[in-house]
Length: 92
Image 1 (cartoon, rainbow, N blue to C red):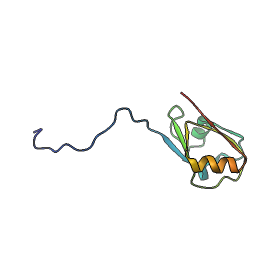
Image 2 (cartoon, rainbow, N blue to C red; image 1 turned 135 degrees about the vertical axis):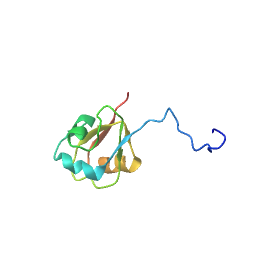
Image 3 (cartoon, one colour; image 1 turned 180 degrees about the horizontal axis):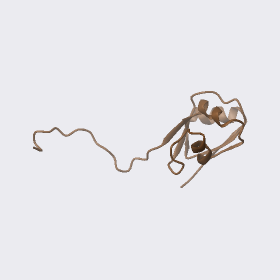
């Protein structure tokens, strides 16, 4: 049986699964000044607050806020800082 079935792909056991949030979807939070993974979960943007979160730069930033996440894309950092906000990395 093993010889008949081809070997397919590779799955890394050390891969970190990130939850992805775009900047455009942060408008659901309203005018919060501090955004943390728990507030993202309460707004329905992520499923679990204890898994790592990555912020991507798709969309526009219209308000000033401080956001905490485990990773940021380059474009997201530039847009947040251009709007006068802060991006804080969470280290675990």
